[in-house]
Length: 186
Image 1: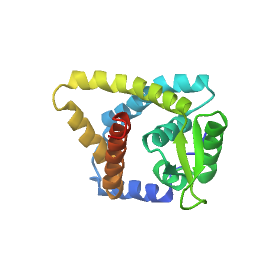
Image 2: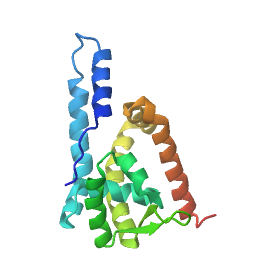
Image 3: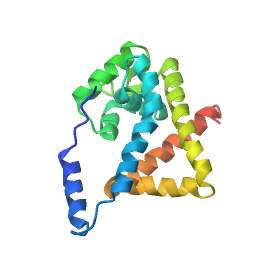
């Protein structure tokens, strides 16, 4: 399993947020625990599929972002995942060796390593996304009108303010690229 240590800047942000909270405020235990349990179950369905392949959550995250961002640079993936180069290297090597991800040189800069999912990688990424989409869709149906937008605002709000716009822009670009690919480049 890859090392997903918390960076010093993340620790600093957490400490600053704790200081901003009212000193006598009770922690939001219910929401904290709901987030823990929601994450556990959200990734649980995919974990079962991945375990059969000898993969873990780090493999899932790499497949997800490479599938959504074909031609992504290794450096960009490191920035998104916030893991060490060594951790990414182990996971990426396994995905490449087993035929789920391909690595190519950049057209203008041969030092660049650009990542693409193979057909097998795309199939696996889509299978995992399908499992997670089914869970999300069921909950959104229960929430009714406006539920998706409220959930989106909440989750975006949980992202550190200094990264939020960049993350939302990346998601929008990935959505646009996905629509473009499905339309056959039209």
